[in-house]
Length: 246
Length: 314
Ligand SMILES: Nc1ncnc2c1ncn2[C@@H]1O[C@H](COP(=O)(O)OP(=O)(O)OP(=O)(O)O)[C@@H](O)[C@H]1O
Ligand SMILES: [Mg+2]
Image 1: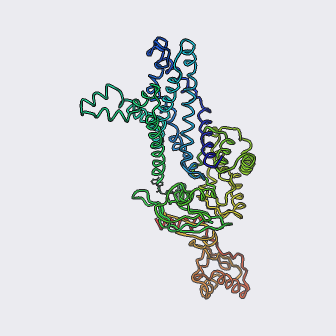
Image 2 (image 1 turned 90 degrees about the horizontal axis):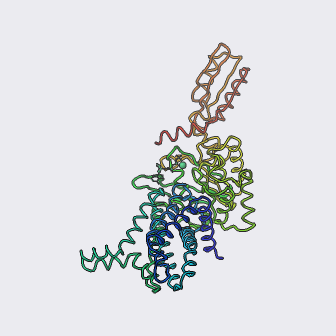
């Protein structure tokens, strides 16, 4: 391993240890599982869909991640500000990028584990019917991308404040905006207001690209959309951390 | 090892550090003194690369802190003010983490961590979670963190804050010992510490250097420094007083106690003639066959110097 990878891994490992040393990560994961499965069964009618699929489950994923990702990511930098450990971390012989990427990866692992633990639903539909597993897989990719995009957004907010509560609430509202801007009702409202505006805005919405991906058509533009939002957020985090010190 | 040139730091309109310059060589221990808000922590934060300077240049070894931060930071062990720690980790877990960030791994890391735990007497709490530690142990853990990579430069912001008297004593001894082969800067509000551990001290006030020198040189700046306390007996007091005042090296004599055959007081020598004056007094008294019961050149006290310098300059 070269030194960049080693430093990132050191940070990731430590963050994961922090996550699992308190019940927080476990509680969040359990709540995620209950919500995502519960919504799918109760409101989405998971088992009633004609052809076996996880569509009902994926339907609610952006809305659940809108709350879940800020809850996972809120402590990333706020905690460093609050404890004063930022001063330690930023005087270590590493680049701030190592810390930014390492923390982002650790939080992404939590999202990954959460999605992984929904496998019983996948087993169930395969047992009951004959789903298109390619679409299921695409759905999981889309879900993961939405989750970590919201994490990256939360990371930016938590770099700004030492209060976890503030970073949670602000991040939640921004994530909500990123979904709503692609919500059909809102899009048509905007279109009525100024012709074509809704369509333009919805191109910037997480929901629009998420829906495309979950259809099973893995288009590179949608993936590039998510990756660029993440890249931009990580960059913004770096800028904020730097200007906060000056 | 460390060169600081014309360093300044502004926070908005507030000037925290103003045109600060000093140099520190290997084998030196520099004490950083100054009243609250003088800019000590701010200066240390700039040296360690945490805060970017508004103006000026800092070099550690050959590395410029702003231009090649990673290289500079690798040379510095830093104990920040208030000893911040990651609360979810154990003492050993925390030190392992820092060791890895400093590029140590495997057996090297374990050895370095164990060595710094020994130096700071942390072996007893190594498996304890950091947030259940007492204040002094938290401080020691952060201190241990600064020593892990055995750095060439140590920057410590109030290293003895919160320690018990035994630990304070031990930390001072440790600083003095490590100072023989490292360059060390530490800030403190305890002036005995400066005498106990420093080879040089800088007093800053309002962000500027107001005094710089060895503890002895600084002490000489105190108002009473160099005055001579004396007590003579066996010769008539009134004559003695006027005779002493007549000595070439003496500027004035303050009498504290006068009896028929005994005189006690303080001689204020002429500028820079303290040694000369005490010799003259001794010679005078013996020529008169008097009994010199006390003769002592007064040393200045560092806290007098500190108070005089920093009170006038604010
Ligand atoms: N981030 C900041 N923003 C604004 N002002 C600051 C900031 N950090 C420090 N200052 C100001 O800079 C000045 C110097 O502060 P500094 O912490 O360096 O003092 P100090 O000498 O370490 O004091 P103490 O003995 O109390 O630790 C103070 O007036 C402080 O209010
Ligand atoms: Mg301070």
